[in-house]
Length: 216
Length: 407
Image (cartoon, rainbow over all chains, first blue to last red; front, top):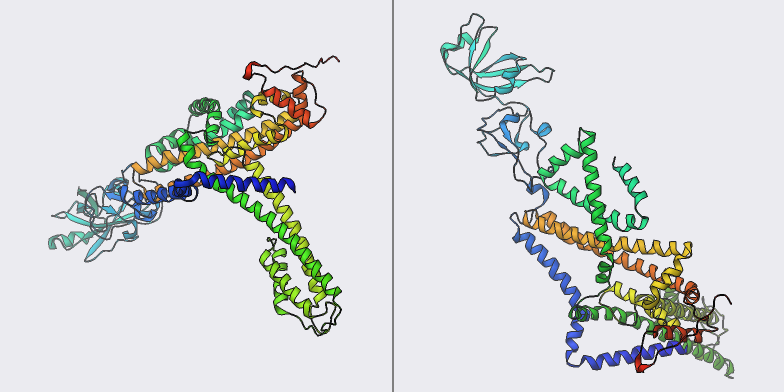
């Protein structure tokens, strides 16, 4: 009990001494005791938010807002069937965190553009369609399993169509879309606009048509 | 490959080195590599090609070996500066910095001391209240005139007692004001009613008296234990001098402990004491384990801080605000958690060291060929004299008569 009383007396004595010593610097000491460390923390947090909001290029954003899209490697007309050669992967080094870049194989490859996309424009996978949307009069010509043509022919390509007697269309026809089924190896068809030249319509109605690309 | 190499390292190096230095450095390297993998394409491609989808076992073995050797070198470097790092955490800073940060620690000390004073005051007040209760009962018994037997209960008193019992069951400190209030009300009631009047009251006065008496005894016991608990915390958290950091104060407490108990300057005998502890494998293992854990936590705290700093710079230069905020806020919090854990481990280490001093101090005296003291007073004199062995103050040197071990 005596030890305890001594201890309390010692504490009281120490406090009195501290109070006397504080004197004019009382408020400074109170500031250091109660405010200083908390103030440092508040300043740090405030600086972090200010820097994040204004000091960095992109400012405050959430992960979805920093999604990095593939860009068109060339002008892509409507109904272009997307393949590796049509797009460029985002090239910004730092922000191309791979979860922000669409998964090309699953989200883009083999899908169709629904609008005309200019070269170097971003391609949002959400705007792509699983089926081409063809308007006007077209005919579908089977490409067979010709991989080269399957790979390079696409919407906007120009082709000449010939029949088995080597009779060909006089003017190049524009490919509206290329469509491949899900079989392996896939069978592809080329949809061609038949309204281009009335003289060619007769030729296009024949069987065993073959495609000769003019330009891709 | 990595596991085989790690197994070899385990056999080559001490457990202390592995846990206290190598593991934190390994985790730090992994965390940096992982974040770089997430953020930098070039690094990710390199890792994919050379580490994750590596085709050649030879190349993978080479890269792993290089990595492990680099890690071992860094770990050695880090372990060699671990004392310096610990001293920084203990607050061995420039004086002007100490003067700025010490008052915040003084506030912690003052809060603790205030709680101790409150516990003592509570104990004293409860002691007075108990006496008051006893005297009021005695007074009631000595009164000749007949009091009313028609006590029907008092809501105010019962509510106060219920509140106090609730506090007791919730393990809270009893509120002295409520207790005082209940006692005053009880005194007023027994001045009017006979304490043994049972009549129609749900809770007769004698029962209220018993409950109040129990509560006061409990409160006394609680205040005593609270005093002991807080004093223990105070003794293990603060030394004689105030350091600017929590860890520094805990570190100072061991010196204060030895000074208070034996008037012994621990700093001057610690290396000798360690030699004595090393003679006993159990004691040595306990001390080494405590030190290893402490070093591990301290280094983890530093490396987390460094990791935070590195990625704050990287994320600040390149633009990724969300990650910048996440690391700027999360990093310091994790670092501080490591620091708090290290501080608590320091307390545990001090416990082991103080126990070792208690047990091995006579071994130390024997090893120094000093006489074994017959009582505590003599022991305090010996430690004091031993500490002044090198002093030449006043031109006099301390003399000791050595004990002959053959005797």
